[in-house]
Every structure is written in structure tokens, then in C-alpha cells.
Amino acid sequence: MLAVVRFLRAPLRSCKTIPHFHFGCFVGDTSLLDYYWRYAAGAPADIFAYLDDFLAAMRDRADLREWVSLTRRVFNVLGFEFKERKCEWEPTQLKRHLGVLIDTRRCLFLIPSDKEQKIKEMAVSLLNGPRVVAQTLARFCGLAISLHLAFPPAKFFLQSL
Image (tube, rainbow, N blue to C red; front, side, top):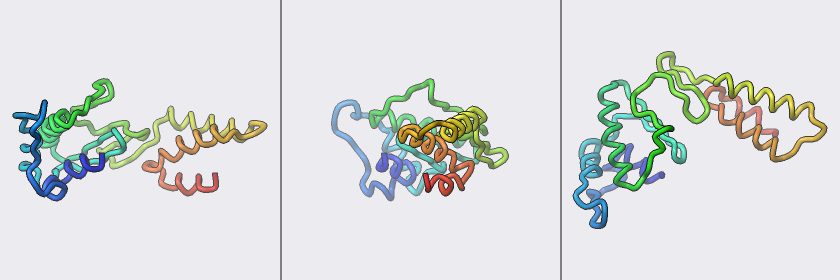
């Protein structure tokens, strides 16, 4: 995914020669070439990628729609498939992404109440249980550390665990 993200962020920097493919489904498709020339100097969107989750941020709604449309075609050309139920193609100012709520109107990362409740319940269970199972502790740490965007000290509080 690193190569894909680098290409999306700055095609010319990541790919010194014009991308082209001479095989199968890529014949005649211009999506990569369109993207390469259109955003050669750099994508207008801030792209946040984590494994197979992507989030793009941009100030102008119309520009973002245009960028998303071309980027979807690039992903399709590269052979990616989308789980439409998990995708949100229209720009929004409040989005749950990687376990936190991102509110761009107020410039905040927020912890969803269901996640907060789950962490509290797991913490109480760990504290009150007769013993701590490593797998349960690891699950708790993973859930808690995922909140570091909304609560940066989460990383430091979990170091001893």
C-alpha cells in the first residue's frame, strides 16, 4: 500500500516515468495517466492511510468529489475492490474513522461513546478479575491505543501494560 499512497500523494515524485501497462484489463484505461498528469506535483487532498482504510481531507467539497472520482478509478485499475457498505464517497464533516470520530467543523477528534463504554467495562473487568489473561490485556491495550488521535496520552498510559 505504501507505493499506492506515495503515488496518490505525489505521482511525479513516486514514479519518474509515465505509468503504463501492456496487459489485460489495463489496456486503454487512462485513469493512471490522467491522475499522473493532473496531480503530478501533489494531490490536493491530505491522504490518511492505514492498511486498507483511507481518508482524504480537502477544503473544497467540489474539488474533493472530483479527486475521489478519479482516485476510485485508479484503485479499480490497480485491482482493488471496495466494500461499498464501508465506503463513504460523499464529503462529510463528521466521520468515524479507525475508531475515532473526526469532526472537521470543530477541528476535533472525539471518542465515540460506545467505544468509551467498552473500554471502561474492560478496565473494570481486568481490575476486578481474579487474574489477568494476556490475550484480554492485549485486546484492552489495542482498543485503548486506537484512541491516541483523540487522546494522545493514551500511548504513554499504556506503556507499562
